[in-house]
View 1 (cartoon, rainbow, N blue to C red):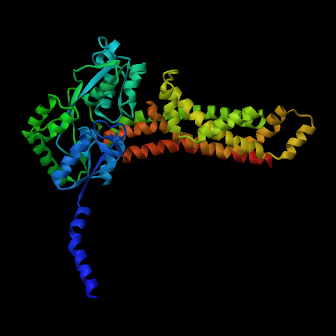
View 2 (cartoon, one colour; view 1 turned 90 degrees about the horizontal axis):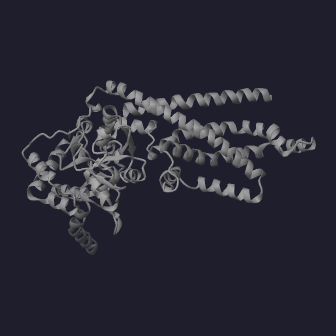
View 3 (cartoon, rainbow, N blue to C red; view 1 turned 60 degrees about the horizontal axis):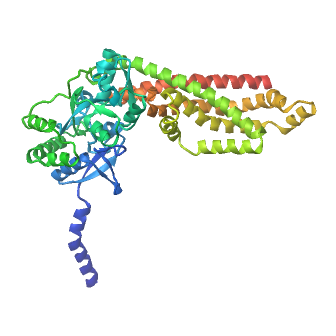
Length: 497
């Protein structure tokens, strides 16, 4: 008994150091490692780790707070909402200082100043030097950014065509192959891309100037103030400068920013280009202004979905017929196609169709989206039609042959109509699913309903009103279709009876 008691005492004497090490408080910070260099990216030597200058800024802040930095992977467009939900304490991934964020979140002081710069093909460097020179031309950027707001304003001011991307890699590749005439992005991104890609130049004159900040939930002001003190100390003693020099992003803009911050100057979110912020308007006024854009995006969604479904039905019928009536080689080829399409994600198929084969076939974005969705759903439709054709009683087929009908006549007059009635319900379900899956085509720069809603929500600083409107528009498109299908089913059921 005494030995047992001594063992327990020894455990408790040794435990505190271990328990303290394990229970050290953490600073959860959100970032996006997908194409996020030099902000946040997977370590080439150990993909389980992340590296980047924002990673080191997060570690600097965590150290100053006496905490351990813990990275939380969040898609860039969702970082604000993730912070509001409490998934992380702070967002640091090239987060831009915008009026929308200032209105809704607690932002740290600016810790890096960047310039929105224009990149064009080397052959066009003398022709396109500003947005005013690009009237009627296509200019790409990241969605949900200050650069995108600038391009939307430039559509009105200079007649350019703004093209939205979900990453910062494809705008430059599309610029080089001629899909774009210019790219407007942060100088950090433009300089990084220029180190690995030739064929374009970046004009040094900024279109606008802004800063990167950390974003915290509105109620987290005390933590924000502690972080501000840590950042000011790092500006004073050179630790921030050392991080920026390590990642080759230090330039003459940063000493000026540091002086202004340390002097207590209130720095505006954007200088050099005026864009009206939706976040500063009353919610219903902002909604009224955005509603036409949402309706146009809904029209694009509907046209794309209807066109893709018509093409998918035609291809699906052809595939199903070929698998039932074709020779052995055709059956194997069509079966392979169906399994390939069903076994790979639609998103991957869209990327291959638009970007993967661009060197050989340069499809326009809308056409690539239409074909990608149609080819994908054709595989699923073919299985519906094949099973419906097989469901027609064999006795009817034998009777048709006895009456002297050819295989084509049997298919057209007896087997096909009955199979279509059987396939109607699942076909309607597929159309509703296709309507929603059309949101994936935004990766090909097609601004459909969900993408436009995301842009609206980002600028507004809330998903409540945009989400309700988006859901209402989808229901307005899908419910009438379902009602029509049920009416047809009832009509044919009555005729059959």
